[in-house]
Length: 522
Image 1 (cartoon, rainbow, N blue to C red):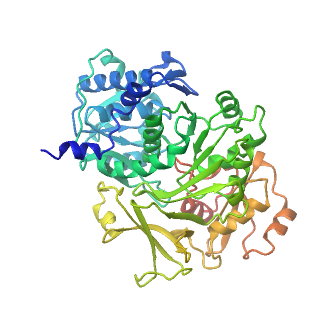
Image 2 (cartoon, one colour):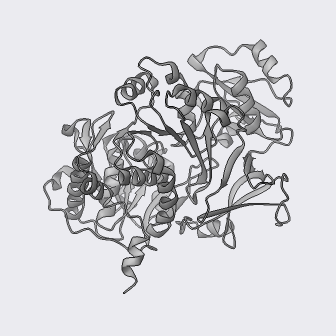
Image 3 (cartoon, rainbow, N blue to C red):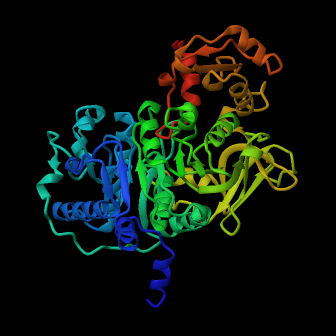
């Protein structure tokens, strides 16, 4: 028992983050781009204190409804910031939030619900009357259904408004504290089980990285069901940063919002940064005060890095890139400055985080690959998840002792820097690195919003391209840009919205290959 306080100090709990921040920093502003579904009357100009009160009040409603510690509570609703508040409220009473992306198809959500222990479900009318209608007998998969609105067939959370918030509950640091799911780029997502102890080991190095920008206004457009968001939130709330939380990434609405608040920190998904390149020259100079950009989830194109950094009028802005997975948290990082971005290799994803992560590359026979030799990327980290819920065997197959197989191919330089080649499942024999060719094309053709090279029916490389404003691709410019690149099939032009994507805007390459094989045409 004497060690319990020490254990508690080495754990990251989501329940108290807003209340602790409000007690430490007071009424720091939080701006939303749309009102909360759970409390629309509060509007969009809020504060740490207001959000802490909402979390406490929601936890009282959930407790009054009957939710108890260690029970699983699925949050699956229309995308909005109240996903975050509901997650913290569930955690505050010691229950385990299970975050399912708003973008999941109904049958996929149903498969994930089957892996749980008859959880509670918090949702809304749009989900119950939309994707969830495709699930056969939803009531048999969940204990009870609560709704943030007046959805038929569910109990409204409003029914329990005014209930007294219970005393906060903290589970042991090695017990499940949060369940998220993998991206699902290669099939049905896996449920990743996080504990507070491992989450603390992800948080600490990110606090160190955030120290130089402590207190700067932060604008975030990120998946609210991804563990990365909660670690970044923990860092920003600790340092008292004003927040601008964005659900709609459309530059037409984001530009004026950022121009009004002049954030010093901006973080979003790499593909959203590509979309936001046009903010570099937007009216009001919305990116002019940015000191630090944050990019995670996927590698970012060098062209995008250069445009973002050049849009800032700060003396020495930077972009920090984190490489990792939901299962591991960040395992490698690197910084880009204006000077380094001009000669950046988009395949370089950095080095391990000293004291927290180690990265290695192994050859086909399992031995350590020599510098420059391609192989499987593996990581050793204190932030690894406990297991895959309902798929323990798959989790064990990912492990080599304490080393986790990232599913990527890459190599290390003589100085230890890690370079990413491709996902193992995406390799094409005729192309050294799909990702490297994509970076080259994005740099040469500024009109491209995205280019993805996938294997075709005969494993030939097929480029699928998306052009800004849906203009036709200029065939002559394409021929010039690809003249010295590996031979590829004729490009297929799709609308960006037609690309199958994950919640973090990762392109589902395997799905595109399937669509091409079935003769899908955009």
